[in-house]
Image (cartoon, rainbow, N blue to C red; front, side, top):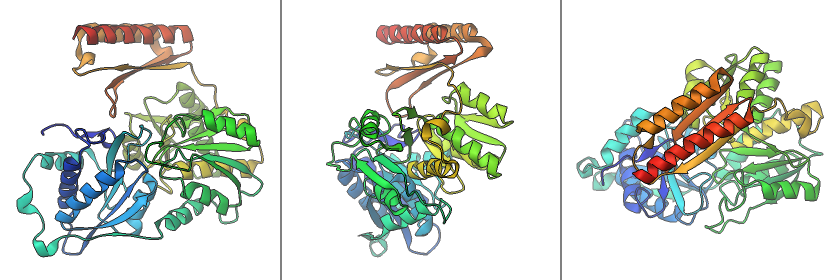
Amino acid sequence: MAGNYFGTDGIRGRANKFPMTAEIAMRVGMAAGLSFQRGSHRHRVVLGKDTRLSGYMIENAMVAGLCAAGMDVFLLGPIPTPAVAMLVRSLRADIGVMISASHNPYYDNGIKLFGPDGYKLSDEIEERIESMLDKDVELTLADSDGLGRAKRVDGVHDRYIEFAKRTLPRSMSLSGLRIVVDCANGAAYKVAPEALWELGAEVVAINVEPNGFNINKECGSTHPAGLQKKVHEVRADIGIALDGDADRVVIVDENGAIVDGDQIMAMIAESWHQSGRLAGGGVVSTVMSNLGLERFLGDMKLQLHRTKVGDRYVVEHMRAHGLNVGGEQSGHIVLSDFSTTGDGLVSALQVLACIKRQGRPVSELSKKFEPVPQLLKNVRIAGGKPLEEAPVKAAIEDARNRLGKAGRLVIRPSGTEPLIRVMAEGDDPQLVEAVVNDIVEVISETRSAA
């Protein structure tokens, strides 16, 4: 069973196939439980999930493993990932667990772990847990009289709704705004519409009928076409698209145009900078964020700090360097004044706050910079390490030389799928397309030869 379990965002894979089996989920519960024993008090875990069918299987397996390690488990049911991160601290738990594969289809699932401070685990702690998964840990499990208990807890949705609402000034109301919110048939299908309604908005909620199979299916932040159509249909002021576990957000303006994570970060950073709230003199994002964002921030004498892909690395850099705005182009927005991880609803509320303060439509507020032409293509691989092959290395080096200082090139293996992601950007769109296609072709030929 030996293998690498953790990727860029916890453990993820096809449900009921390695590594997302009930057996491994139980062992993760045991290993995580043993890793966070801190003294003689009753140890507790908060465990949430999204709306996938396989969530039942993974949840019960993890409960068994956690209880075997002597941890009491508080079952939250379907709830956003950022709510789990918040409830770890609110309920003074030792571990937070979220069962979700985020924006992936229903047949995938995953396990995300949070420490007692509400932050995702460091690489070192994940490696320690991973090293225990292939060992016999029976000798270190709880005695028969020290087993954990599991119970479902009520009121957690209300706690999260109140937390989200408090991120806005007490006097601010969303009255007068017509909002369409697409919950992706996922974890926020109850809390997001309720929070917006309680803040005074007129709310049109779509994709709020999960059935175990329809999470992220042609909806949510990765498929916003339905939201765009609904915004036009009901003449809404704004559309908000969350993903399956509601840790990312994409905005649609009143004309149906999409506003991605880079533009959202630019909007919030500018607003916070003007009000004196922005900390650290910049924003943290990943290598995938558009060069236009970097130039926009530079015009305000702010710096864009880049990390490798994964909101966990964005958060680590924010904590290390004292910045309070960060995120990813995909819509993971981290506002550390409020949250320890990406929070789609809270990020959307900050956008709504900009609208209410300035009294201008989303289309005017959200176009902060003209994106530099950028192209991303994925190459599916069956195995091996094509990026280490000589022809691929040569193609990448040639592409960097052709782009020069006026562009960027990012090639990386996906942390969640068997893909190589090839991204280039620069002021010349034809050159960008050419270098991406050339690299994709060489990787495909190398893969075929293998």
